[in-house]
Amino acid sequence: MHANTTTSRQPIGDAGTYFIRSGYRSRDRVEYFVDETDDTVTWQPDVYPYTAARAKELGRDVVIDIGCGRAGKLASLAHEYPAWSFIGVDFGDNLTWCRDNHPFGEWIEVDLESAERLPITPSLVRRSIVVCSDVIEHLVNPAPALSLIRSLLLEGGAVAVLSTPARECRSGYDTPGPPRNPSHVREWASDEFQALLRASGFEIHYAGLTRSDDASNGLSTQLLLVSAEAAEGQQP
Image (cartoon, rainbow, N blue to C red):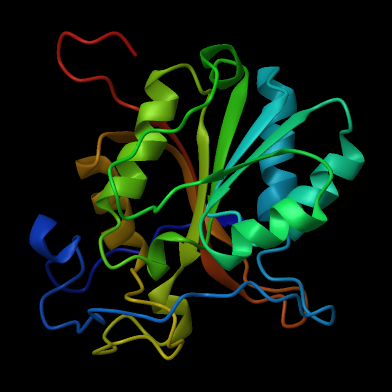
């Protein structure tokens, strides 16, 4: 992992394009992403260890995984930290699979493109750290998911760890889109994604690049550590 200093070569977009530059084409719908395990490659192998390290530093023992998929990496954390509590949030077949196959954790079904709040005990939220790993790019409207993450932080979650592809490292900053991965709606360049997060009420404490997978070991995934900026007159 290393800090990212990428800057835009042209003006980034605004809230209407989720801060992606003018001319980029996003998809308006994608098929449901089934998180089927491929034992030969681990995607984003360093995101969950990074999350665990931050949890230990901050004295948190609850991990809330937004868009957990089939929660294979969450299961690895549960094996390493059996005294911790784990909450996975997703919907459809992925969450059903988790309930049927993972004896640990609490599994909450939520459509991440809705504005629902999570039915999590406040005392658990106050002990938590949040992770949302390579989920935002799958959402036609990422605003509700970002709002959901921010609400958890305002309610006492320590920080959130976010990851998403770095377009400038994959298809190139000036690629017209849509992404090559048919389950991705859009992919942000690093400066664009950071602008989206700031506009969504987050303070960025770290922004860098991490491995996309453990086969190529290429640094082409954005990794960010964020907290919630309180609205004026609101306590963080």
